[in-house]
Amino acid sequence: MNELPVVVVGAGPVGLAAAAHLVERGLPVLVLEAGPVAGAAVAQWNHVRLFSSWSELVDPAARRLLAARGWVPPEGYPTGAEWAAGYLAPLAAALGNRVRFGARVTGVARRGRDRVVDAGRDTEPLTVHVGEERITARAVIDASGTWGTPNPLGGDGLPAIGERAAGERISYRVPDLASEAERYAGKRIVVAGSGHSALTALVALAGLAERHPGTHITWLLRRGAAVFGGGDADQLPARGALGLKALAAVRAGHVEVVTGFRTESVERDGDRIVLVSRAGRLDPVDEVVVLTGFRPDLSWLSEVRLDLDPVLGAPTALAPLIDPNAHSCGTVYPHGAAELRHPEPGVYLVGMKSYGRAPTFLAMTGHEQVRSVVAEIAGDHAAAAKVELTLPDTGVCGGSGVFDAPDADQGGGCCGAPVAGEGRSIEFDSVRAV
Image (tube, rainbow, N blue to C red; front, side, top):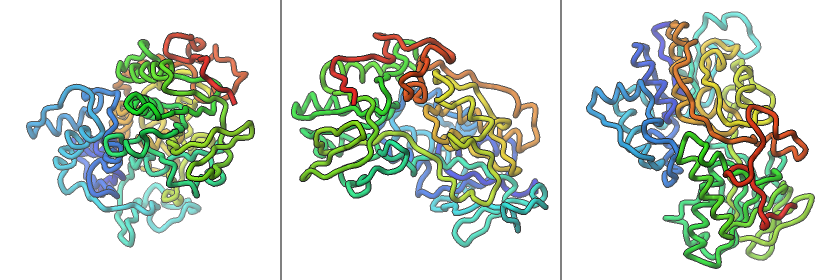
């Protein structure tokens, strides 16, 4: 089995980082990427600028591999396009024929055994299905992410009635106003969601509203308060600044905030659509931007034994560290193979997919995950158990689970209650509670 490759699913930032660590340890590796290029998912949000700097977006093993080819890391804060072109593409080139594009994984199993069979699970290799091809693997690192499965607008986790039928009016990505300005300029727009993607969209659309005064933006929140991040307390300054810019847009009157709204149905009103909840309905709008997070696609892992938290869909040992119902702070203790291990030997979910439905994943977290996982696969258990990362404090109090419960004790958890006026949770005269 030691001569078989470790198969990495996904040639995104975390998958390629895993491959770099495997190469550094002299282990055979094959990266399977469904898209045509490295960072195919990143390329779909190419216009969005990251709030992590270049120094935080380059994996250490990848940096060493690229440095041997004369690569020098840029400085500043890249867009998705710059991250893909300036780092992911050169890294994939450095890995050479270890990376295969256009290879969509359709299944993973233990060779000759379905999920029910106990015998041979620790001695038989894994098989990775790519269409009709079968690739025998020593281990599988699933870094395929969650980009292809965004959460719906519906407040119960399923599409709202009429959501699919109104698909031409609903987007699940941050708008690219360089190419889509005409779609949104002068229109009535709803942005649904409470995370950093929603804040990014609000800031961009508020700028559009300044140039096109007829543009009206409604920020739709399921929770009872608007949260703007850690502000000046965030140790990632660009992330804190993003929240403060969104706060300024609300205070300037460019964004109306509607809280406590859980969409049940989407109705037609001529060329416009109307969002309806149990408590009421919004005025007709032209466009809806749904940024309510993502969820993992586990369908092609149905024949391997996974130990997943029933709430988040994250590995059971990791879930308590990232569950927004239990933690009010966004900082997550660094973790690795011990928290990511499953009952199926040699199978690991890493990167965004390891978080299930939990929010706020950092590239640095993924780098530490794969460093530890690769060390475990290589038999270096001491390195796998060692923590080699200090994550920045978000300065954010109040996770989604806390704020979704209106009577929750927001003073508990790992930090104090939200403080008005400090870029955290703030009430405005313009807020409509529905």
